[in-house]
Image 1 (cartoon, rainbow, N blue to C red):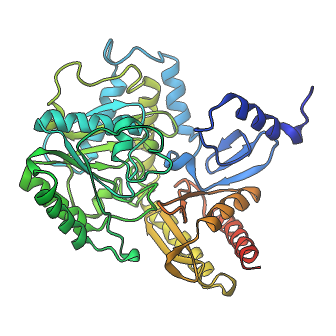
Image 2 (image 1 turned 60 degrees about the vertical axis):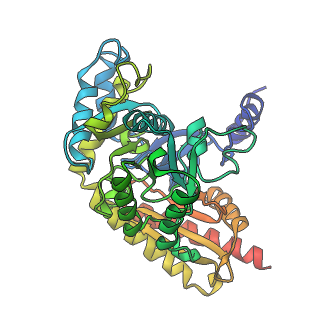
Image 3 (image 1 turned 180 degrees about the vertical axis):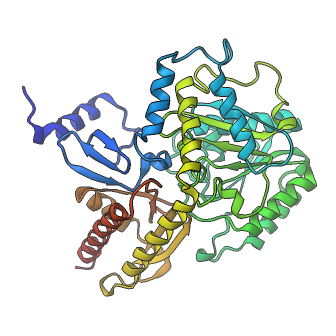
Length: 438
């Protein structure tokens, strides 16, 4: 039976349900056909403004011409040899460039993997090899991936840990301080001292890991005081400080890396997502003496540092510099925050937007009932994402309580397109809030 243009999404949705497991959650019931910069067209020809960027993957936009050209040029030569079998210059050059820009003193080294979770796994392996210890400390609300170690480090049970059995041992979680929710940095640092007195000898801790801005956790920004306290404690006890820049990296926060806002220098840094402009590539970069701890063969992976992805990564670094995307991130953040504040002050939306957060173009608004931080409104967030999608705007929600809308518009998007998307957002939010109040 032939499928009409108007039925393509429905037919594909039915095929997806039959072919893919339910554990692979899908947000939108429409299927992409084409994308460029910050716009996507579905299989039925409908246009969408993309405020999700493939979950922070497309800081340089969909199919940036320089990324396309770099990948095409590499494809004319070879697509794969496996770096462990026969190396290639593109891998080395990209590693050299990351070594030069990460905010860590002294000699640095880099290894490339494929996914952010794989980078996290390898960072923990490297830290354990370097220290001879097992323990790792992470934070509530953190997200570090869906692999076994990634799940264990992630500070959210549903849906990431439910039904997957026993997590790896010697993983500890600290409360992440969020002033909006009455949780201060001093309490977190005190909780760490209590942990060292009551639960685990700090000499058993290999690493502490933190996101400069929690991604899935709600776009809560790690205070400089917290990061500086972590650095001091890690130095005191010989603990490796791992900074997870998977979502915050590559100009998203107004600097190349989110940690740079604090002045803190990590020992190891994990990267992925926007590193390669839509191609699967992740990295661990860190102090050479730590990176060299595992023996030959202890690190690697068949596809890690794929030649096409490395070519894309080198192009991305060029684009960030040539188009001044760090400065552009700050401009976008200012524009989006201004528009959200206008919504917050609108009579029909009074008490709906409880908090607005931004670091560069990493922007979020927290939806609550009656302006009360203790009354999260995840149902409104869910309805807003769906309604915005119907109107042609791709949004993402997040947060341990499911009530945060996060904005990750490509840094290459024009102001006119961003404003068009914000117009859709305002209209959709007013409609959803009115329906809930009725």
